[in-house]
Image (cartoon, rainbow, N blue to C red; front, side):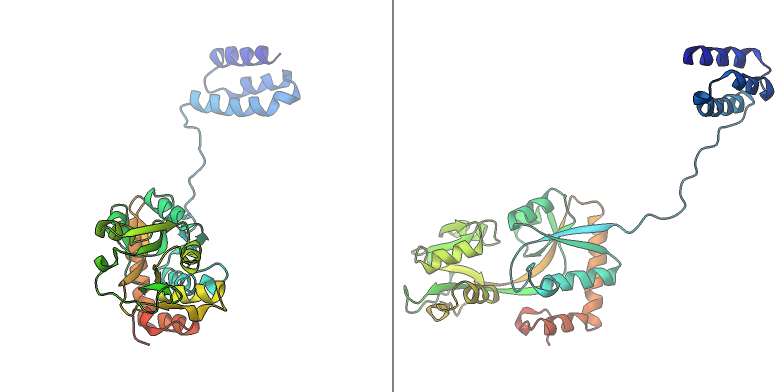
Length: 300
């Protein structure tokens, strides 16, 4: 039945006057109701083309699309950033306020640190934080202006050593050092030739230090003491740190080189960061979270 209807329609289209709509519409009287709508649409297109008219198409929306939401990944590193902290920690709040000042819409997602870095490397997300620059990361990422400063020291157990300090890293070759895979110091320790027992997390590395399986553990000073208070609240007096810092590193937003428009977006973010520094928002965030001034990039 359907083939007969379409065949009749074609024959009628060929034999009728090219612009005579009346003859073609008479065909509808013989068509079952179930085919009425589809054939009526076909007739309009056929007759319009036959009369030299262009079929009308839906107009593209003149409205701009909603602002792009940029995914930013991070991990657990209290008190800098943590899912259980207010505002996800002070660095998260800095990122959100700087982005807002820049007109960028961002969404922060937590994941293990290796996954964060891999996602940035392959352009799966816009950025991750807080990261320090090194040669290997420079190959796949750009870095924002600093959002904070990380002072890293060596933690040690006073049960194993009464006192400890150093002046140069190559003095540490006799020690077995703990560490976390993927952290910024990994290439540096390898280059110097230090003996390192790497773990998948700082918690695991700290346990090795506590039980005497490693002699030293490089940690951010704030992070290390907070971990000790959390994991070994009754043993905190048994830990100490080197007077000499391993380094004072800038902490940044690490932006993927493989993410679309990453250079322009990073420029916007940096402008937003400058804005919240100048208008006092940065200082209020640091004071609200009770972060020592040595961690900030401005005096307060």
